[in-house]
Length: 122
Image 1 (cartoon, rainbow, N blue to C red):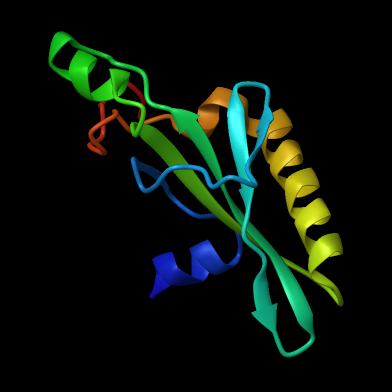
Image 2: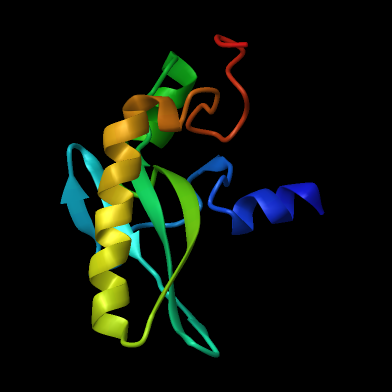
């Protein structure tokens, strides 16, 4: 339940190869921001995924990371709600850019391309 609450607050967990970015994803500083606003009673809530191509950390991971489908994903949801979908899409991209600017490569600190903790950071 606590993890679900954190995800709703936009403090979600990174995961490996959750999915691929959709066609409407925007590239920003080596990441892809895929806006996926959630429809609510009052409009559209800012929500989306930030993707990064998985990097191979070992010889065993070389093949899976070189696969075009090997992405790490970070889901974010914000409290912002907008009346129309176009504004929500634009704001989701802006929020995703801010997350990347603030956290960058630390967005995926302890996850290897296969989704397991790498143990290199506490």
